[in-house]
Image 1: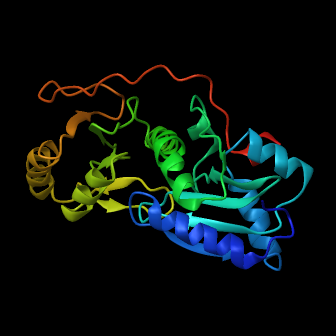
Image 2: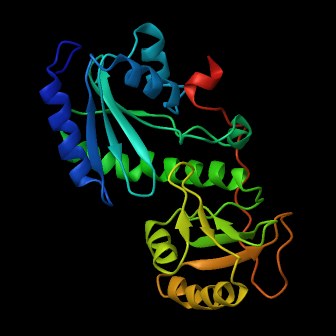
Length: 250
């Protein structure tokens, strides 16, 4: 079993194996005890009010490994009392209001086996994190219906552009490949409205491409009113009252 005196190499090695076993492309970075400012900033962004928050309330973060996905999603692995813990990291540059009404994707305890832990994270934490991430991003763009794994909701913006926060990695890849630009800070995908003809062509093109992957589309105005020519996105389940990342509650 691990304790707080485990070497940094063991934590980093565990995180590397875990990242390699998770679905999608994840990279890892290690934050040593010497990187105090980074650890403080990381603590503020940990999206958890459960077991990880409880541990951090008892003792400040000593070291951590961060797993990052190209779409901006991040997870943090840290030493626990009896092994390792993993939690989601909230995105930078989003206002507190974006987190309202969103259920926390609280972290989980991991076994010493990174292969077994990867299966657990993929089945439990990742789906909850991806859903919460899409919801806070969608709240930021003023939409009323967040995207889901099986549906991408596109929202017209006041400046004529279109914004969306896809949950499905395949959808995100298709959007970027067809002209959408992802904001590296918020993770929101935008399609410029400067050239309305090009924008319309892109919208006509991505529908069949997404459908070929079993992903539907919905198009709505900024106010939330769905356009009559497009099938509206399915109404998401009612979410419990949400909480913001741990630092926002302390």
